[in-house]
Length: 509
Ligand code: FUL
Image 1 (cartoon, rainbow, N blue to C red):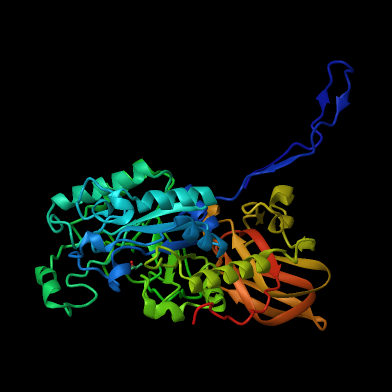
Image 2 (image 1 turned 30 degrees about the vertical axis):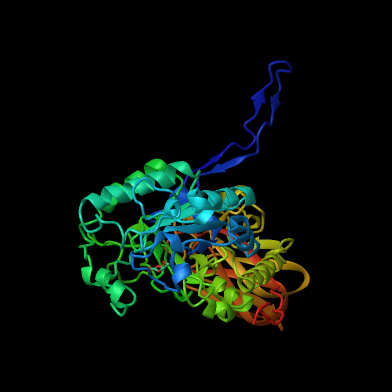
């Protein structure tokens, strides 16, 4: 570490020929990043933290989860489609972006595509002149919510699927989606390539034709992902790319809304690992992994990804959504929450109500950082430089950080609060632009004349949220870094009082 002092350098004033102290500033170099670090697009994604998924296609009208590819285009005919209702409800829930299933495994395109006849142009929707992707992207723009695309690589309809020509079809579809609908924040590549699919061939005699066809591909070689990823980056350089193997975001390994307590944003992929292969450690990642590929927790607000009338009474409650949020965003992952439009082309009343109450709960919980005006005493500050002071933990700049000298890896900071404060939730963030540095942190409260540990974790990363088992009242807290191979860079500390949940009563039962 190099510290340059400009203390009282003095300058000869030409006019007065006298010495004057012109600068008392101290400049200390920031620490060297630890291991692999996120790209600017990944840092932005960590800031978004929570965004939504919308599963909508012919399945909505056939009551299926995976279509067969033989569905008639005429099935797709939502009676009252309103993208702004859907996007508005997701925004009210707190989502910062919306990813639309522009094409699911059945191959039906929700936009008029030059690559296929199996698209919205051959449906009765808006007399064949409709474009759901356009309406969604415009509704997102109007609402100030970002727009993302899901384009299933597996296509059970396209005649070329399974042949080399299909890869060019898939790329042509991407070109359409990534050039005609404005900026895209995430591109989602599904690893599912199910052969006979979800229903394992248990379908009626008409549909059996497709299942017998069972076009299988070798996903190690078929898709040539590096070329396709380069095309995506060329067309939308700010977008993050999701698949089981990244390159930017990885699957958390389940669809139930969980992630392990310890999650590393890094992982090491072996060459030849592709979306759809069985990859170990997806959920936890690996400490000191060779790639930065944040874990994304994808989960549906209902049992299925698509809308089914039979699931209207099974919408997750706001309380359940909050525990998913704490288990995903609060473990340093991002949360991708699906809410599927119904046959009207609207989010059902129950989904809307749950999202609204959840969004209000999130806003209320995080409205005030109760540690905001605490007086801080840190055991060390890098070069005694105010740019790395402990108060950076509490300012409104998400990425300014408290950083210590290189030699100080387990520092602590005591927060003297302005009188007794009630809280039940704690937030801690690392400046991930400098890598995921910490391997242990803990928070204590001063209770009855001694320090009592309230919370601890191994990994912190982009965000750690600790929900305490009960509300604590304290005047003094201590944040300890318990293990770190290098000096920590912590960018945010917050204390919150999460309100209790009102009973969840779905509007339609
Ligand atoms: C899975 C798909 O097979 C599901 O239908 C859904 O789209 C989910 C998000 O990903 O792999």
